Length: 295
Image (tube, rainbow, N blue to C red):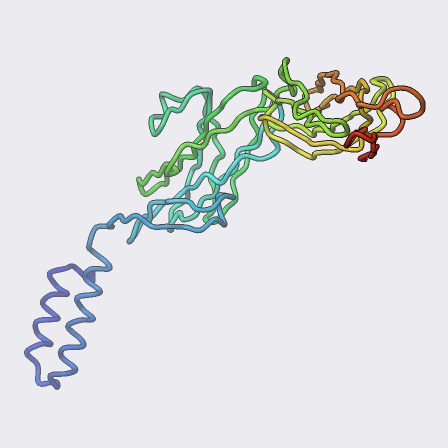
């Protein structure tokens, strides 16, 4: 016999008036009430929190649907980004008992939760619960900003958008700004400045020495994001002309800027202590001509 809310309530009422013990009657009434809620009460929604396992970052806020027909889809980040393509990733966290069709919407602007406002749609087909979602997008512009968002719907009539739109930048060739120079120049030290203004990220190496065609020193600074760069160098010779350049490279190209500077002149002149040989400065103290060399 099909159970209806009215019949379950009637059974509960009859049992409450039976000869069973008061404790047993109370327990059974609570059980019947729970069954009625579980089978016939409409699903409710509540905000929930999921840790960084799915999105690749620190946290993600998702919508948890309690009851039958729940459907949850997540954005989980962008991988393998170049100047022309990227992989969009997500996860179908919960599809309940119905098959879920999953789509990803993307483009150069944020369409939010309106599919008509997105430039592109990719149909990922029917997906399983807890399935990792991944698709590649191509023909992107170098140095462009893009947006994407996953969407799912099932045969029970439920639909779900990921809780937020993800954005990302594509790579472009690195570019160093003109006008950077050495500062805090002394007899044997200087601060070498540069400014990476484009490229998303780049592997940067500093070269310096007295011959711009045959660098005497190198310093690999690793992968850097755009911004100001400053490196203090030492063991220079006084009164000499030096050169330096920051060289950056990434998947799109390379760039560098060469800068010249001169260290301060030594007080001592002539002979082997001309400042370009010894790194010494001359200090004369007192009327007797006491000479002290300071390295």
